[in-house]
Image (tube, rainbow, N blue to C red; front, side, top):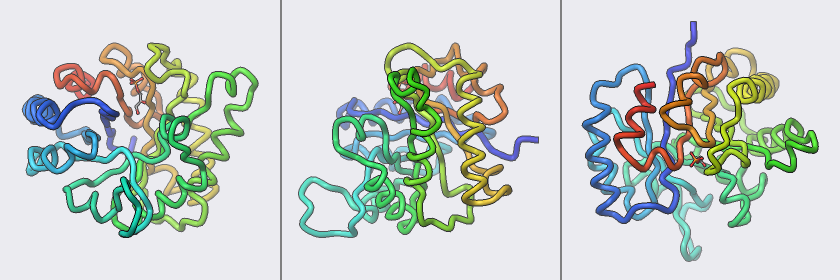
Length: 251
Ligand code: 13P
C-alpha cells in the first residue's frame, strides 16, 4: 500500500496579475471541490499570495510561495521573510527551483539556509533538485542530485516526513515539452529516496513525498503517477489554466 497521499502542485512562476490570479484561483477551487484523495497546492507570485489564500480558505486548495529569505526581518530590500509568508496564509514554499539557481544565484548553501528558515517557521519546504542536459549527457546526474539533496538538507534532524517535499525537476524538461520518461523519473526518485533513507532512516524515507516536475500535462500525468516512487507533480505551464490543472489533479 502506498502510504503517501499524492500532491499536485502548481508553480505559477512570474505569471498573472493579482486580478488574474484571483480569477484562476476561484475557478480552481470549484473545479477541485470533489477531490479528497489528492492534496492540491498552487504557488502564485508574492503579490497575490494573501488574496489567493483568502479564496482558498476553507477549501481543499493549499497555497505556497515560490521563494523565501532566511532572516526574520531587517534591512533586506526586496526580500520576504518566513513570518511574512505565514502571515499571508501560505503553508508551503518552493525552494531552490532551477530558475532561481540559474538566474538569481541560489546555491546549495543558500538553499540550505532557506529550508532551515522555512522549517523553523512551520512552512513546508518543497526542495527542488534536478540536473541540466549537459550534466545528464556527461553522466553526472546522480552526483549532482546527491549534492543538491545532501547539501540542501544538511544539518537537519527531520522527524515528520509530512513536513518536507522533494521535487525532482530535470532542467532539460522544464518548459521544453520534453518530459523525462516515467522510467527515467522513477530511477531518479528511487535514488533520492535511498539518499533520504541514509540521512533520515527508513520509515521517514518511505513516507516523504517526491514530486516530478518538467512538462507535466493532462496526457502524461497518469503514466508518471503509476510509478511506485512518484508521489505527485510540480506543474508549471499547465497549472496556469484552472481547467487544465484540474485535469491533472483528477489524473
Ligand atoms: P513546466 O511544467 O512548464 O515544464 O515547468 C515545470 C516547473 O518548473 C515547475 O516548477
